[in-house]
Length: 350
Image (cartoon, rainbow, N blue to C red; front, side):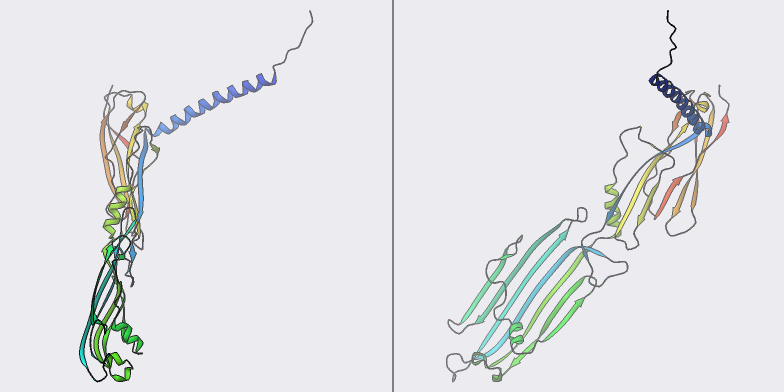
């Protein structure tokens, strides 16, 4: 018989190393768990949060902090009234003529504060009576018939507006700019008096008044309270999976941006895990003590609120959980966390 020296294959050697490493890892993991449980109380948490920004329309003249509005109304309002001496057909025959007209057009844009989508609506009307020579007086009425597109049923401006007459005569009148927190635009108004030097034989003598206002008005302020409410409505529920808990302390908080244009917030719940070497002592009662720590955004000293809960061990060698009350979003701008917990024995169990 031939003597053959047999050596373990390289693959078999590698497999042995893997098995040894796996056993070593399992031993080390077990030691880590025991080390983690050495403190007898382990903290876990679930936290949910959301953020939200304001939207809509900003002010012409910014406030401090800036304000936002959800409704913008742009208004065009024109009006004139005039008296003239007509000599259109016969330069030797003069008679008085009275013209007047009024037009209003409004574009309203509404912003949904939750989705930030905007919807535009139009409205408007026009009424005018003026002398045209032949056939005499002409009456015009018109209105916006499609609020979605702004389409008019007829004329969309005053044909005999003194605004235009005044510009033609080289006297632009008085334009007053408007810029406040809730309004912007211009208001043009005044009076007009022209004699035969105006050069219009059909209106040799004319006087009247006019106004022309173009202004955007803001309303329905998007307040900080509205923003907070919307942000809270966006916070999702806690995970349905009972096993989704993160290690360590959670955080409940509320923060408002310095410019008050956005905010964020969150709520939390946390639990304490009592390790098996503690809970296996059936009947043993403990007082769990910890603190909830509030840190304020404005820099004031933190607040430490003592908390405690009395629990009796159930004898389970696998440990047990204790669930304090959840912590909701605070009213003040701050963050709330919990400290480590300690166990104080109250009675002796089995």
